[in-house]
Length: 289
Length: 278
Image 1 (cartoon, rainbow over the protein chains, first blue to last red):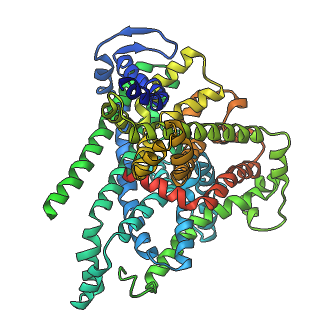
Image 2: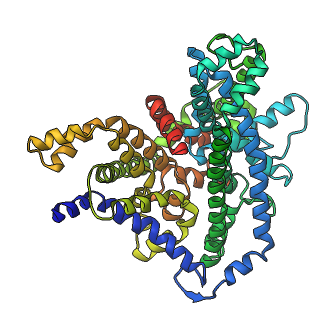
Image 3: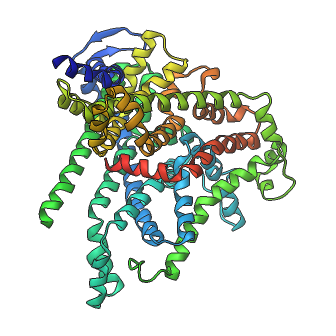
């Protein structure tokens, strides 16, 4: 009997083996290397917490953190509001609504390099689409990709264009789950459109909204390709988010241990966010009961 | 606004908003397409030329003959299909094992797999790069495919799906003398086809669009995926052969994935929403 039971393991072992080798092992290696002065070519020297101490004294690290948070603050509220409005407008059974939903989602299937290629020549001041439109209206083109005050908003706009699809679909799924009889009861009570919206729709979307905000924040903390390709983090580091900083430290300065230490700090931020989401959505349910 | 069921007409302001949004979504795509259809020398003088004829397919011809782009396309297809096939196999086996079989440490192992959902790419990508460098696996197809196989979400997803299939089915087959592998292969696996499609499309899309890992693992042009190749092309833009050619590459690279999107729209939306909610 015992033999048969152990043989059941055969089905899960191939995955477990690869999972340990490709995810768990690198994860543990990462923690270990972060306590070393290590370069990309394998030389290692134990330094304890030194990488972390240096990190929290590094103005470039703080600048990258600041840029990342600015990006998140620019992107997350705007994206949440826009996709909520789109979902409300497109939550109907008509054929045209389906086409619009497909259109707003379509940019999400493109890779980051295609998106930046498209947006580079929308944003660039000499030959870009926005510059052409502004010039046609007699306005001086804006140097989106080189003015330190404009690079971060330019990255935010590109990211919003790219990322509308998923949150819109999540809001649509949330709207579908609201029982129709709640609206019928409200209309019997003579509630107007706005009362219905603020008393029924918005409270029912609470969990979805928390989910969207947390997912988007986690995604924006890890923003990378847009910044690396569109602005190379410049000018003078003003648009360098944290993952680009990690990339540059590892592959530009070859300081592997230091780069991984920065990645571990990012990991803690993301985990804190996941816990916050869990806490917020479960606490809400207790209140409602 | 929310009483959609009763009143199927969109208020005028909302309609205007949707149309404006749609215009902003479409304009960059149309601009890209127009640029790709113009000769490079004309665009060099002024990119406004994109708004007027003559248009040409010259840039697309240049992609197909004598550029690296078809090679990158082939690499992307090999890597994405390889990853998808392997993930489906591994996750189906593991999902069946976790959902149906009893073996020591089953619950512990399942929780161990779920923990992987909390580990973001950033926390493992650099040490994994180091590991693969030690093993000499960079610039190879296995080097590009393997990292995609540690997919805890896929195992979670398939386990849920197998659990939802009534147990009487396999019990009846076992009574008829079918082996456990028979039950898995002939009875249960065909029933999971919708889940396979969803997970497959989701995996394919993720692998096709992956940027961080192939960027650091594939460093020679002959092993670039389309995503990395296009990144290199735009980084070297100043020296290369022109705006129209570059934009034709963007269009060319978008076409396969947009076709996949149009065919599998339902699965893609379901899978992305499912992965988000999990």
